[in-house]
Length: 289
Image (tube, rainbow, N blue to C red; front, side):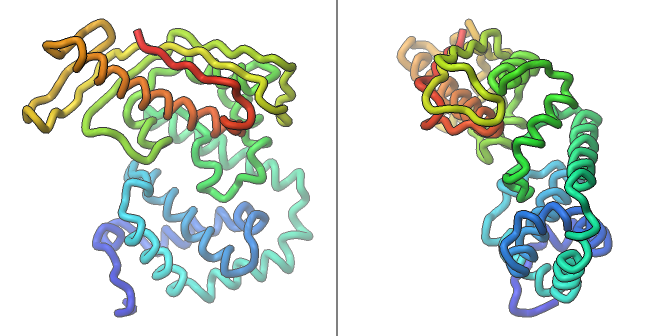
């Protein structure tokens, strides 16, 4: 190991180099088309591989780990695999672009995501498209949204219909919120939406939304929640309609915090489907109860 790298024991214990290198090969074509030169390709391929390896093998979101430790390990792996990574890049540049027709590339992309979502289902998780940007596939977002519609069996002509079904059909926990937001308070939360209503001032084009034409009203209920109160050293158990506090002010303040958390989650879900909150929405109103 290079002494210039201070590698976290977290990665040393968990990464099998042979399996890691094998996993990297699967992402070559996707990362190549979205990279800007060989150095950018190396960084993005190693980072995307690390994110997927840690998440699918250990159910750990890389955003939960110390950023410097992650960056140090990426640099370490690039140094280890530099000749291999360069070979991936230049070989694909020479032969891959000619051999891979766009239709075949799209078929491979679809197969990749169908397999990904199938694995998530098997693990009891809710299939999602939160990690498109992390995978370096932002330029393929429109195609992936359509794949997601097909996989989930969603019928509809607009992304607002897809988001409505996604939010209404699922029960969300802190696990999904951590995956989307990268952070969470010290506790647990299980919510269910019982109202998701979009109002559109203009007819939406599925892949080319116009400016500031959407309103959203949504309501959720808290099925179960546990929050650790550092002031008392005790867990606060709460749910919709259940006030765990002695005074209304504390309850109202706590409830507003939960609403703010869920509103941020909803924003991130909306953005994962290609919307820009500031550009495409007039307002978003999230309530609880």
